[in-house]
Amino acid sequence: MDGDVTRETPFAEGRILLRRAGGVARIVFNAPEKMNAMRLAMWEALAEICDELATDPDLRVLVLEGAGDRAFVAGADISEFGETRSDATGAARYNAAVARAERAVEVMPVPVLALIRGYCIGGGLGIAMRCDLRLAAADARFAITPAKLGLGYGYEGVASLLSRLGHARTADLLFTGRRLNAEEARAAGIADFLYPVDQFEAECAAYIDRLAANAPLTIRAVKAALLELARPEGARDPERVEALVRACFDSADYQEGQRAFAEKRKPRFEGR
Image (tube, rainbow, N blue to C red; front, side, top):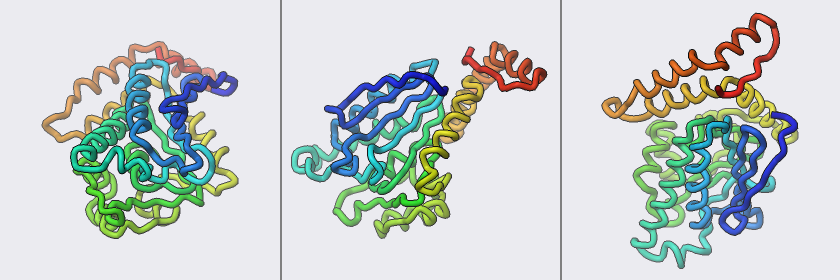
């Protein structure tokens, strides 16, 4: 994907940016003066952007990252709680927006990567845990702190953590609100890849390029299988996955992969 021209579109008064270069889209949480803390409008915009990207057949990878080097997302913007979460009714609306945004990230039909530097706290960790993979720098710090704020942490949020981390890790994070450093987060299964700060951008770029260069129809079929397997057994639709698998074998990309192998060159996949 090298050489693709980057296009940038602002959302939520510029607090979220969508950058697009070829098959790679980047959602940037763009409030560095507040360590990219999430406002209600940002949650709503995140869901809308993901919903739109999910219908794009040319999308290969979605990347989520924070502006600057201090934070991925350092939680919710507490300064607006008096307006948006002043009572149970307001909190319900806010929580519904959070749940919709996190779900929209989770069900994207392509790989979703969280690139994490600095603080990944509260809602930031909630977003990151809905991604397929979390690539973290050595300066990353992780926590979920509702127990320190008196907030109720919703059922879906707990369920998401439980499915990924297990009972004990989820209980520890939510009961204590303690902060994990990058090494602890990797040991806990929160950070999947950990890089030195001075190598972080290059390592992440190489990983993104590797994904974007692979056969997109194959990757979409794998992602669909992962999503189905995450559902309760009785609600799964394996035929949807099998249809995507069959489409791989009927594709021009399958023929290109065979030719490239025989010719000892890198394949050029087009998603067709």
